[in-house]
Length: 104
Image (cartoon, helix red, strand yellow):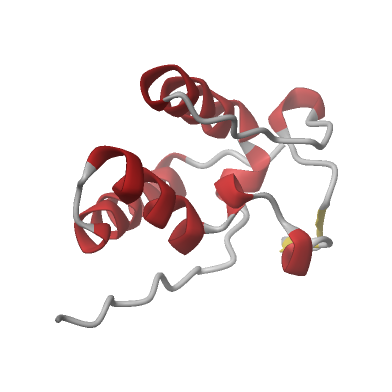
């Protein structure tokens, strides 16, 4: 069995500055696969309240949607997709997000 290549976060904070995008993904996953993911933090103007100096203040206790590997495992479980493919799609999305990122 091939070992999963870890997801390397660049700590750019773009996903935390644009939680609205994350919420769209949650709605899609919840609706398509009958899971109940949530994002329990406030996100005024799209920015997560736990983003401090481009770092997550609740990193060790972050929700599944903020944990790329755990999120990929969940999606894989419900869709049958390969975890590495899901992680690679996320890597591409992150590269694109960093290009387009406007920090609020």
